[in-house]
Length: 563
Image (cartoon, rainbow, N blue to C red):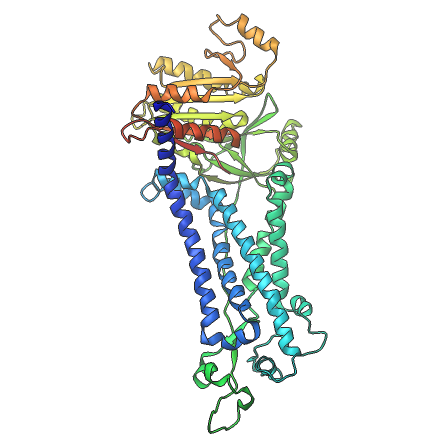
């Protein structure tokens, strides 16, 4: 292997390991907490004297059920945190406690959300299997008539109103079967409801369903309300029980279990009162969210069926690259869809660009195209932070947008224009490389005016080298290419009308990264993408490959939009 290739490989591996260390540490901490909770509660229920008689009936299934339940509760507490958009936005804005390394981990919030969800599914399976065994063994103990210890324990306090029993199956009739108890008790019924809700949410979250049938994913995911409601009341009835502290003082199970037939009798050699049992307490939790109506300034339908909505701010505060959720009650009261803000923080309004990409977006665009006398009502939730907020934290930034994925960078470029207008000296960024990949020529019309304004502003301010932008047309025919070649010597591009010529095909990313690394040998370069996963893998690989192991030389940091 050539020395240069060896150095590149070492640089790639070293940089990858550096950025992976915190991610591994955080996930190891989460995994460690899960292991600790499971082992701690497994040993507690498997060895604690309080559950001695419960283990007589259920064996080790008691420990498996309770340990998995604790881990279930722990992960159910975490599952909403990665999708608490206000919390993530707050953390992004709190630089003192959320530096670049930590802020990058916030971009993996959905990955962690999925990881926690799969863990919940795993512990749910363990919990269900353990309780199925528990119900069978409860039933076997109640049906037994051999006066064994398990039989005696099942008969204790069954006819009293003191609620001190151990076996929830109170009679040995055929009616009191495990299935009957499952569907007639609070823990059993809520357990079934929770499981069904979880199965629907997990299966509808598969990539194919989420991409092809978004409404199915959206509606079934709202079953989380039922899931948490069921989780709150699941353990209220306390079917799984342990010996009370007062009873333990009068009845030592390790000693008294040897002769259960003499419990409650005055035997001078070994006097033991009948044991009494109580339930295990449950855990609680809750969530909160809010929304706001907005009024419109303007609605414009651009080429390629893209709708631009400009709305009044009215106290709305935003940063570059942030996104909002939009709901149109006349189309669907329950569907909320995320859209990146395309306006700059310096503007007196906020805007989004919406491309037709499904039933909901097509209906919304058609609603505005019909030009009805009354403008449809729109509700907004947000704004929420993304990786693009960090653009101005880097000396050099590479912005890559694919199709409508240009929207967060429109906000960045507009903000730059305003900063130039006001000669903002706080601007840390010295150079921006902007790449826009589109399939059709009509898409370039979305932000032609913005790019033209930036060209003019940079010429007038003497900063023509600040922004280097490249436009790539990935879907084209020979007639378009022929026109471009024929008019290549003209000052303006035949496709976009801009000074920058349009390139046909896709960028050679290795060449682009090599050129940037050569031009900025000692800079920290932030690479920002809003586009498909395949492109993300290519860019991330280049970031690792072209980053130097020497901390004094060029470093590429990859950031991707996730919402």
